[in-house]
Image (cartoon, rainbow, N blue to C red):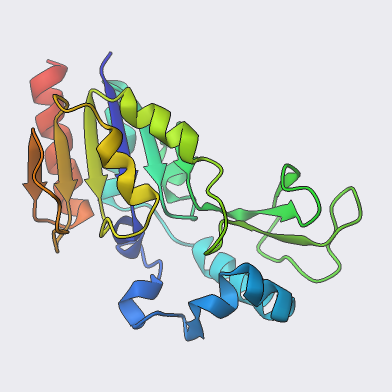
Length: 231
């Protein structure tokens, strides 16, 4: 069974109503990104950070997968599919994707400020000051903030190096280290980039550019891949 690896970005979630900070001149829902998505912001005002992500969860819990998410999940009937996502929402999982690597963390999880290996699924949408891990330390959002290491990057690189088909969708390929994943894909492997505003991708072998939003381009590509490799 061929291995398809997909790098998904904010453009996929945006079609389901999830706001992206890059669409608002660096502001994320009216906040400077440095204030709500950095270790320094957390140190300055943890209550603001917790309230910000509570609002993201409150909204995100009602968001539904779009045709792009569903197309990726449907590919699992024919292929070994790994989704590497820059998104922190759970829309890929809601759609039915079973193997999702979250590079930037998960919105509906918390983690210990004392021990980053202690990660908890949230029951509901609220995380507040005074909510503590089993070691007694304050819980924070399980989000990889700007300036922090990306712990799942090695796992994602391993997936990319083993891909038979590599797909990039809904990302500007400007956010590193995720943007560098395409460079780990073997040269002979077909590479597809889907976006309504195609990023400036350096020429490389077997690169195919599809100028379309995720909800249109992914179903189209899914049919093409099934026709080419699974029938």
